[in-house]
Each structure stands twice: as C-alpha cells, then as structure tokens.
Image (cartoon, rainbow, N blue to C red; front, side, top):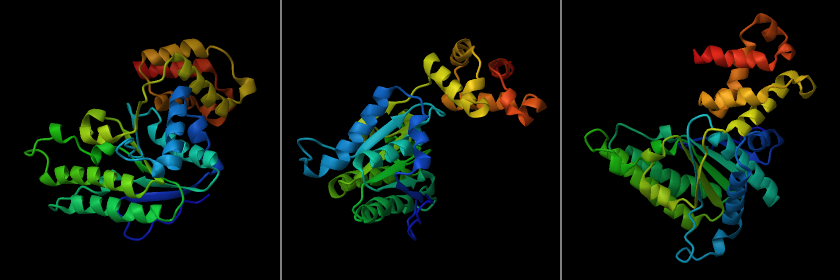
Amino acid sequence: MPALTVPPGAMGIVAMHELPDDAWESRWTKIIVPEDVKDRLLNLTLFSLRHRARMDSVRLPIHGLIVLAGPPGTGKTTLAGGLADQAARALGESLLFVEIDPHAFPSQLLGESQRSVARLFDRTLPELALRGRPTIVLLDEVESLAVNRSGASLETNPVDVHRATDAVLAGVDQVARACPNLTFVATTNHPVGVDAAFLSRADLVENIGLPNAAAVEQILRDTLEQVVGASRLDGGLGPLAKACVAAHLDARRVRKLVLRALSSRRELATSPERLRVEDVAAALRADSK
C-alpha cells in the first residue's frame, strides 16, 4: 500500500500511511523484544484509542503518549510502525500512521521553531485527527524536539530551543484534550536529553535494551533463514549468540553481521545459500580485531 500524500504546508510530517498493511507485519513479528513488552505496548495503545474519550482527565490523566527508549539499533522506530499496524488489526479498522521529523523544526530565526512546533500540534495534527480514524503519530528522536531544559544552558542553546520545548509540552496537552483518537509514540536514543516534563506526561515508558543471548540467537536464526533457508541452516548458533552479546552488538548490528560474512568471499556473495554459521562467526572475529 503506497504512502499517503502529505498535506501541503504540513511542516515536520515526512510520511503518512494507511494501516493495516501486510508489508508492515514483519515490523512487529521480526523485532525481537520480550513478549510482555509487546503486550503492554499494544494493550495501552488499544485502551487509549478506544476509551480515552470517556475518561476524566483529572481522575485518570491519559496523554496518549508512549515512549520507547534505548540504544540505537534496538528496533524502536521499526517497532513503533509495527505497533501501529497491529493496533489497526486489533481495532478492525483503518488507522493513520504519521511520521514526524523533529529535525525539521530547529531554526536560526528567534521564535520560528516555537511557531512551527505550535502549528504542528495546534493545527496540523488536530486536522488529521478530525478525519475520524484512529491515528498514531511517531515522534522519532524526540530528544531533538523536547530538549531537556534543565540540562541545556542558555549560553550554548538558543532561547528558541527552550521555547520550542514549551510548545511541545503545551501541544501534547492540547492534543490529549482535543484528539482522543490520536496517540503519540516517541522514540529516543538519549532519554537523559529528553525534558523531564515530557517524560512525566508519558502513559508508558518502555526501555528497549540490547538483546540477550536467547534473543540474539533468534535474530541470527531469522536472518540466516532469510539467506540460506531453514532446511539448510546448520547448528552452532548458541555460542555465536553469546559471542555477539559479549561484543555488545545491538540487534541491527547482529543482522548486519550476516552481510559482513556474505561480503567476506566472492563465492558467498554470488551463492549466498552456501553461507554457514562459521562464516558469520569469522566475520564477528574480524570485526572485533
């Protein structure tokens, strides 16, 4: 299903997608995180989208905001898209997934970032939500948008950045009140850099850490099966998974390790079905030197 056309003048929106989409299902099923994490993410999303409108905001303050925090390469952004796809399937209706680029807002012009951010939350997103369908908005690398004001000095950070953070906080509050069919999913590689007031508004904060040995083994198996097929996959994944954990590899680097192995010899590049676990282990040793 092709991406939808972004409305003219919608600053910060880089893409919009109508879900569910079969091509997006692997964004959920192939990102290896503990199942209880996935359960919490999906359950909270469904509760927020289905029931927030009838809840008293004082007795149960729901901001429709989920934060995924953790190191790069752990699948946070991909998982956010998969969450939106799974939510659409569970709801049994079309869902709008909107991707925001936080780097579109900083400006050298005093006050311009604040006005652009305010426009996004006060006008652009409410207009999309008014279409009536469930809407999930991805705020990727949110530390670039909701800057930690307590750790940012006025000497090294323009006043405009501080004002933009204020605009984000006010915007999240406004959308929470006016758009109960809209839920934010924010990702961050650097949670210390995110403003504390933004994190306090989150209904759920999930820390997505580096994969353990069992998860790495599952990731390796999935990636190798893609290349050589399940019937040709030999053993030895357990020791290799432990070696990857010892090397502090994130999930993305584990999958890239298979590419590193394929590039090590011409015969593997031209006939990838000949790839074996020992080839991947050799690539890890070469990368560790």
